[in-house]
Length: 106
Image (cartoon, rainbow, N blue to C red; front, side, top):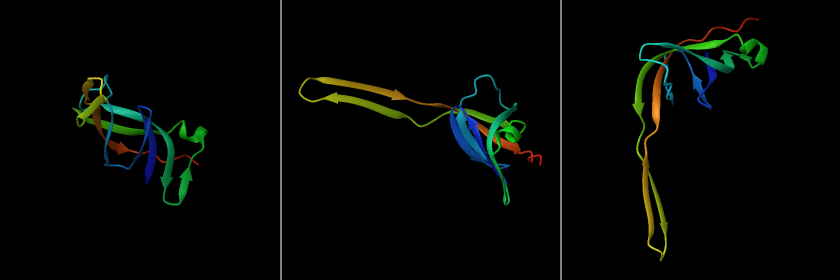
């Protein structure tokens, strides 16, 4: 059984026990429980995509860690003008562990 969930404007395929990296959830602390909205649930051959049924299904997850991603280097350069700019970025992430996916009511 797995589900497609939405978090931070992105979609993730999750199953129970998976650890997933999502955009930072600033209000949550390590050990807290969060609910993720579900877009699709696949249970064997049964696929649930009806928005009315999925409105009642929330995937349960536990916050494992807050950390930064890999460094991204941004370089801007224009030839023959002496224009050079260097910038770096590290995205903030939250690691969550999926603890439960409720079954769709039929």
